Image 1 (cartoon, rainbow, N blue to C red):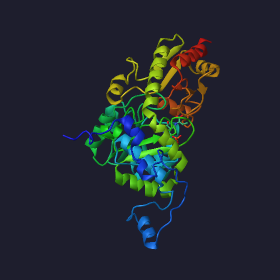
Image 2: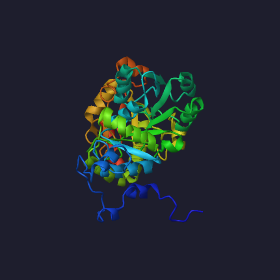
Image 3: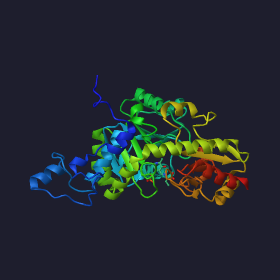
Length: 399
Ligand code: 4LM
């Protein structure tokens, strides 16, 4: 039996403490922000040893920095992975990872709906360099099986999916991939949930990526990203994808702000989830609304899987109005409290129109093919009182 001391601390406690001991830093309650680009060596042998990875220690902040390291230790702990790498953006995390693990001739099998710039990177970026990008409906397990091939190197998806909220069964997808070929890497974008709600590595995934710009930072004041995986993969991404291929390095001050944000992650997620649930339930009853996409509604096709793999249903909602695109535009232009803006996971409720904004990287035909309707409206429920957000949405819908 482990003693009480050995027992794993709770998520909330680890969000505040993991990776940092004030006793090692003059008693400073918060981690110092190491504003330095380079690190001095005692002698040439020490410098050479650090470059060769044979000696511990930092040598240049494009590779690592002590403030960044605290954030990485905390993120690895919360996602229950071995190691993490913090990056300058979510796209920095995604691109640094994929540049590292795929080669020309490999296939990446991805869910049919992705955040617009992830789609663009795959379709217009990696494809140009001879990587085959193959799409499947990851809620249809036969479709995944049919598209796996001996070239498949990575399976990649988001859940719930940005922007249409489809829910993908992480354990089932991992089983299908590993049964086919145990070497395939399953990579999950966990931005919408954060580890406070969903931990893909515990469900069998190999790699988790984040836009830390969103809930992890939590205050709409920074751009950042992260990758969590086994230590060897993280080291490869750090020394190739980050150092040589993208240079998508996080700034020390940004790492500090994310550490600050993560201290309140669980508290904030609870409120985001409560507000989203209340908003979705109102919208479901509203006569102007055609469809609501939110996995916390019992009528949602993702409800069962979300109940199993998520601790709560998240803060994101999508909807379609009865009048389609025109009705959506009229409603968005009438909002007073909710902000018309892309991004998500901030204190402010943010609403946007994916077809003309976050998913405008797809053509109209591609959006139709990939399940993104032209009239879809996306809501990121903020931390205001649910009553006030609902009143604003109701007045905007009333017209
Ligand atoms: C948005 N999203 O949807 P950076 N992965 C997911 C995302 O939603 C995003 C990124 C990665 C939005 C931005 C405008 C699921 C971004 C990319 O923006 O590079 O940190 O993350 O509104």
